[in-house]
Length: 375
Picture 1 (spheres, rainbow, N blue to C red):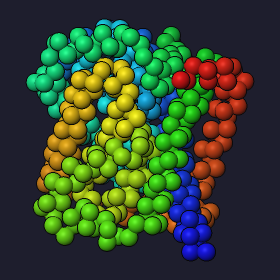
Picture 2: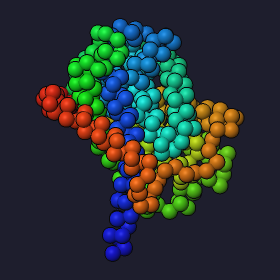
Picture 3: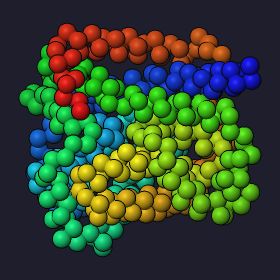
């Protein structure tokens, strides 16, 4: 009975977190679908010819308008690289498309607070700058050429079709594009396919977060994150945060519930930011880098991403300490109270209605036929 009780507790924690983030998920994916429906992917290659500040800024903007699925981001980055985009700019796009997207920001605000969302938003471009500087130092033209040869082999990773799909409407004003039949259809298709792309990560993240919140004693987290040694913890958090993410196998928005758990457990502010950044370093994605670019470049990508994440998270922590913006209370929304009829329930009902409308349109406009192109 003790095992059953413990399992039930973990599952309840999982459901409680899911209920808390349901409306932000629908809102985030809805806004992302709208952006994808009116922003074309066709011009990405032309807009990313080099690693200049202008190209990197454009890459961040394009990435923020893309899907938050980490696998789709990696596949699309290779696609635009194969079509002639600069390698560093393609990697900047990849980082931005999983760290600067609207659904991630909304969920972070709901679960953890606006300070974490601000840190994520400010640290993302900083991480891109650090990445670009490191690539200039350690990525030779020969290695880029080898990466392009390997990329042109076209070895399959994951979410290839989802990354390549472009149904955007480009004629007319923003409102005309969005409200047209084509715009509504494209929005519904992107909405459903984005959900299908990341639901496993979301479910996995919630299950792991629920288990950790229910089963792992707080004393373990305090020891592991060096809570009793504040100075050491400041540096230890950003170092260990990405490594925890690597072995979690959870990427995209699915790692936010985990981030909330380890924040409550005692990891430093910079540590939890570095953990969120590391969704592109989970083991399955590292294996895709190997397929796409070869072992050498995969090693460079992992090393550069890791160092950039650690340094960006440390700098953000120091900045937020200086500004007094780091929360004093560790009270991320890991709820286990009974579900009640409150504003969360009302918003969930409203947004479930919106999701239902998009789902019906998806099925009525040939959406199921698109599913064959997801992988």
